[in-house]
Image 1 (spheres, one colour):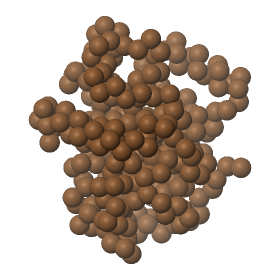
Image 2: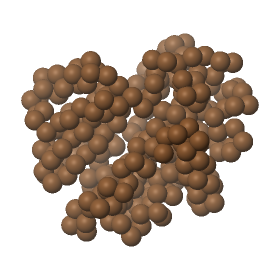
Image 3: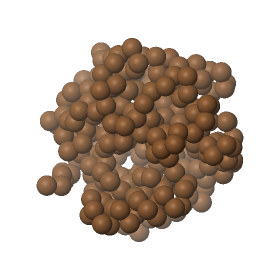
Length: 278
């Protein structure tokens, strides 16, 4: 049975939501605006996308007074080039490695100290990364995180790898902030074609769309948004570092390897330092 959200009072909460200009992120922004957040910060790649998002929310429910659009291009999609069948950003990262892993990891690092100072037992902080059931076929190869040695034959391997990274980062972060009144989550929103559109392979998107219609497993973007928000807001979910899919779910067994999780954290920090990002 699909989960539903109650009415929440977020008037004391500051929320930063990435990926809010399309798909489930757009629906999450609309839903969150209904709960009267103190500040709802929505990074957007450019002013046009930001303004379009505001118009969508205003047309849907009119609650835009507490919304801030931040000019933040974590994806650099406008400068994508194709090299050796691997889609890369101008920073020479494989697209999904940057978009799904490095970008949210960097944003988390930049905000973490401020978050630690702002939270309390009465107003705890929450960090949620949108993962996927694809984490279960993901692999962590520290010699090939950025697919430097070539593309995997399976076109979805990079997606699965980065979704596993989301789970690992959540678990390592839960250990880092275990005494800081901050809870971490990784979540599977459900099967939604918009989640995979950024693979930028049109024939694969079309094939997925047909398969989803046949299998009837696709859900609406609104339900996907609710699936992500529900574990974060539910008073029942007090454990940190867990992976959620219709409740607590067992992720890829690699996610339980603390050495791998810590190494991924350390290697990711090193990559960002080497590129002058931190």
